[in-house]
Length: 345
Ligand SMILES: NC(=O)c1ccc[n+]([C@@H]2O[C@H](COP(=O)([O-])OP(=O)(O)OC[C@H]3O[C@@H](n4cnc5c(N)ncnc54)[C@H](OP(=O)(O)O)[C@@H]3O)[C@@H](O)[C@H]2O)c1
Image (cartoon, rainbow, N blue to C red; front, side, top):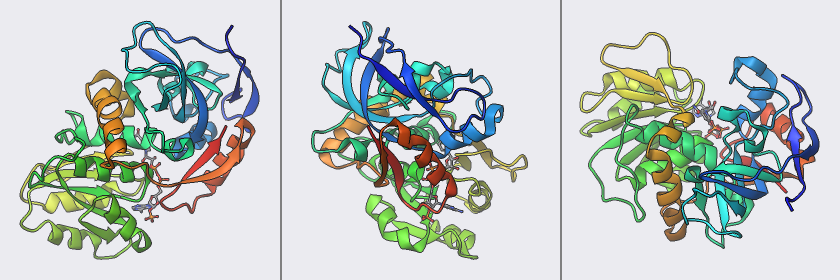
């Protein structure tokens, strides 16, 4: 018999608060797995989607279930899934509800349906709440760094590839997307130059960046251009709402290497000559080999041998689906630095 399920529903466009009530347990088909959720991480997109309604993901049908980041245990495996997983395995995965709007695909529930190609096995010594911070940050980082229409870097390996002799700029290394991007680029053999607040310089360097600059410094653009002196650039990833312009200013002044900028949010309409910029889309991972290469191949090996760590560190702000709305309100209030809010179930 299917287990009872509950979800934190959004019942109508812009409805606040989320409403916790029963939800259908949906069995996996094809390459899906069902995961019993033990921890959920919260992302800016979750509250933005709730508050902005049809301005974001306008195809969303209500009622539905939001949420992307889960860690939990496999309870059922679809008929066309590979033999990668068995019941009881500990995994993380990316909820697909942003794309499908199917309630079963949203992370804010006790049993979620995940695509096998966007899930990773996690080691026994990694707590669910630590691991839950990974999926959307990882997916967004991978989309910008590795997709053929973005920076198209070499894929990462564990242990890391030897240095390739190319440098990539990752703006906002202490953000969730940036914490993943720095590590992925280093594991792929690239030198990383990054930005953060000074209090996070050591954190971003520990993730693998060779140099970190204060994004609030008035000389940050000139300082980073100077840091690229004598280096071959592999392009840049502009992470954050205000990141695109300074990063484009830097890349336009680099003379050795491609001038493409992957951006986490919309790029400006006007670009300097020779510079290209494009928004990274997590949805694109589903149609390319990058998704499974990162989630299925690299992350389990990287977590096991230490090439990759779950980052930024979690801050548990509640237990149970009833705590999700409060967690989203805290996230929206801002002021968080190098941390990700997590709800335990
Ligand atoms: N395209 C997609 O599919 C997609 C998916 C997910 C997220 N995003 C976007 O990606 C961005 C990052 O998301 P996230 O979840 O990683 O954010 P996050 O973890 O909440 O970012 C917080 C961090 O951003 C840093 N930061 C704040 N202002 C900054 C600035 N002006 N310059 C550089 N860094 C700054 C802060 O670093 P310090 O503490 O060091 O100051 C802080 O630690 C957001 O703009 C989000 O909308 C896009």
